Length: 331
Image (cartoon, rainbow, N blue to C red; front, top):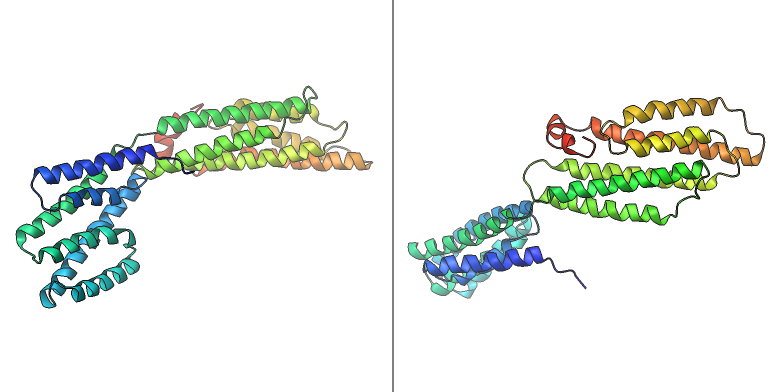
């Protein structure tokens, strides 16, 4: 069963009623059509609604001019209407106006049934479109700013990552067993929710808010890295070297996960442990070979985990750093 989008339901109901009421009060003919135009114009996001309204206005002007020519020279009859629909639908396919066909057709039928292009009638029809589309824009401009929700989700995600990194630290030190894989699924669900919210926010404001979406992608890539580290930890057997050093890396990643330039602390630490790894004696048995291979994978992935944040920061624009980055957790 589909979930009801109450936000959109309210916008459609209120916007359509407002359009009808305004046109009715002003004595505009066919005032109910304004409500239909509003209903058709309201989309899920502000940007989609504005794009739809622009297309709808172009489509309407094209339809009115085409109908005027056809009805004037052929007459207000079914043949002219058939030719009109052929031209309109062809243009809609070509110009990506398919979602505007209904409103344009409704308005043109008014001319056909009234059998007139009198100035006052044309004025009323233009007013219907203006009021209907304006109501759609107005109601979507009232879309709630959910940037605070996104920042809260960022806090939750960073808290999730911090807890999981500490759990892997305790596992390496043999204080706790390896955490259940459900922890990874739990973090993944938070990330999916955060990514969806960031995408919706980006589509509902007209400024550059790609920062939040890029942030979620960066955290998703870090989670994918943690999954590979988790699988390498599962491969470790018996005693293995560098336990304290690797545990210190997990601890540092956890403590600095929310800091803006966490890679400044983490990268030198991880590089130093990799240097220690290279100085370890060669493995003498199968178990040692498995452990050393797993440790190398873990260290490389830990370095990559840290560098993902560095890459994210390097690609921020000066405007993003000024507007968003200083506001983020640990900023």
